[in-house]
Length: 389
Image (tube, rainbow, N blue to C red; front, side):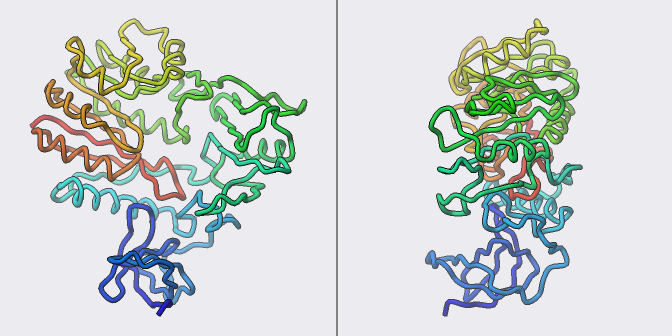
């Protein structure tokens, strides 16, 4: 039977609601824990099922009408149907479940703070990566496919990016491409639009743009990473700084990027060692950090730099990509007995995995602070404070 009735009892780490049917776990996108739904089974994976909603029999108190007409078609958002206050609660549940199941942390609810919510749960993104079709229309891909979806307005993009999206519709790129990137400095009004477009209306093809965080200006080149939520990035930096004390004389900033943590760490510590393998970010950082004489910046892979004998510290800040830290990074931290680890993560499952490794090496998870960098999506940023016992 393809159609089932199921009551949802939990949330999975990719944002799908989960329930049980005939002893199997069922994953259903765009449902909410507490709801009873009629659903169609779309895939039987053996020990679990994937299904899609046909009818909501008993809706959640937290269900809302999504503002975007493309919600559920475009795969960019997963939570627009959920009241924002409950989105952040669900994300906290995911963090705690990952810590318990993967990290082996007992009673993670005692260590997990309430999420730092966004004042702007819509129109917050400072970066858009659009697809472009043969008619030079801009849009995204339909969820789960490579099919083009024309987009006239994106509810999670900053309004200035939506205005630029309207201007660029139908304009021709000067080189053949399937993608256009728009980046906007929310606190500076600076733009980066790549590639160069065949238009005289606006400037395009910039090599870099500028943005300010906590009053400090950064230059960011086209290939360099920068947080997509400027508003919440400031809370993220402040959270990290709150864990730095006067005893943290030498601090390593691993995966340092263009220096967004480094700048502020250098104002609290005697010496900061920044490590970043991206050549583009390294070049940007040379400009961003030029006013400081207590920073050593290494353009190397973190897993290589940490094994250098002349590299040691009281504290390390790590902000790895979604895949988490390389095992060699964690090994070096443990071998050097770095007493404090401030771990910034955008993926709870790999954070939990790395916490488990450090716990096995004598470290203890003291606190975890979720920060909602990505409202309307299932993604959640966390800052974990981990110390040697």
